[in-house]
Length: 203
Ligand SMILES: Cc1cc2nc3c(=O)[nH]c(=O)nc-3n(C[C@H](O)[C@H](O)[C@H](O)COP(=O)(O)O)c2cc1C
Image (cartoon, rainbow, N blue to C red; front, side, top):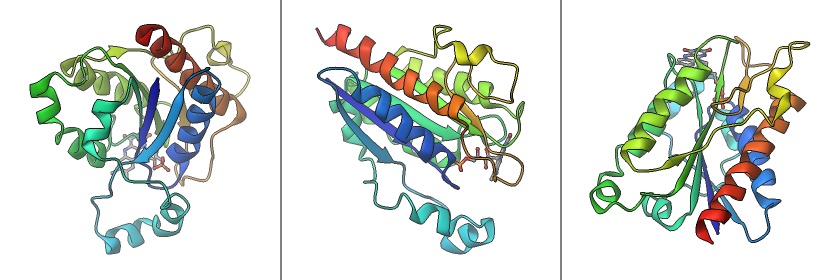
């Protein structure tokens, strides 16, 4: 049973969440888990102005995802930062290259799940996941979120991401806040939950 975690990250928040999702998925017996990154589309000079160059070096070792790898997975968990309440353009461009997979029905029946990151608490992390789901439904995915059995999403004693739609983190306006332990736990839970369901479907 193959679980693919496909992420794009500018400053490393989503990468950190992706690692936690992978840890959770690996807890499921028989799960073969791979992390892949979405290719960057911004010019180097733009990335420098955004202050992203050093951060992106920390995950430059992660192999870039080839579109065909999606067809080989039983479950795919996508990670994206919020851009104006939607997925980032890099992810959109990657998904727009999956037309052949759509035409062949190659992704129908696979488990699909999304985690996200935003700068502010109400900056669109939920809308990012929900609008991402629309694309997954067109591709025939069976969508899985973050059930309330992950009780950390009920917390109000601290600022935290996470909702029934999926694990999220709040990066802060200047990006200085890295995922909290509760948000990392949510990501681990989502990875394990998706892999558990995929294992049942494969059987
Ligand atoms: C063009 C652009 C648009 C953004 N739009 C939003 C937004 O709508 N809401 C929000 O809270 N954060 C927004 N952000 C902040 C990013 O979501 C934040 O930097 C990201 O979640 C950090 O994750 P990363 O380090 O994995 O890239 C935006 C950032 C950029 C560059």
